[in-house]
Image (cartoon, rainbow, N blue to C red):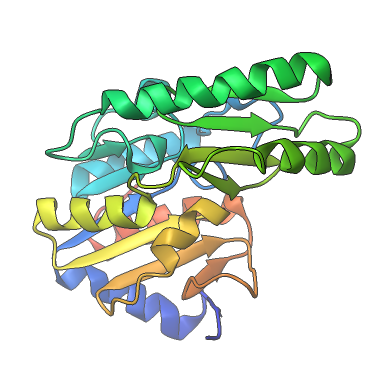
Length: 255
């Protein structure tokens, strides 16, 4: 499948057509609404993006579906979004509740990874506990290739209940039988009673959405990738603001 640039003339017309039907607009956070930063806890939307997103959320149903824990995600999103889904779909889904078993799995994985981190000290590697999933960041490691190899090796020793999802200088460890972003978006669309869905993300975890074979779903990847199953792409994260402006314009809202 050929991935097409979203802002070409013909594709903008397709985007415009979404305003004529009930559409849910869903966004990833890191790398999409907010730029990727060296320290994940400092990530935030720019003032311009936040202002535009507030207006979009006041105009159409919106969702933010993130790998971050819901507790971490909530203060980073301005009021107005109809749905906030965290932990790759493990938290925040309508009608779903957190499962104690998932937290116990996460604790078991930490019992493996924490001693390994002490035995293999690297100040650039950070283990993030999201309650129902883990993330091992190595963005700040001075030897990224070696760090990646070492992390890959220890993750291969995890049990069959752990699903490893590589990202941009991060490995996500999630329950193998738990929800993923694709399932999360599908549930949110059904709950919202939307007839059409729009989703934009930038990472491997978003491929669970991009791989959905559904004509009523428009998928966009931030950053072109030949391996991605997204239908459209934006060249860079900075273009997300233009996307938000277009959504507003197509719905007759002035900035």
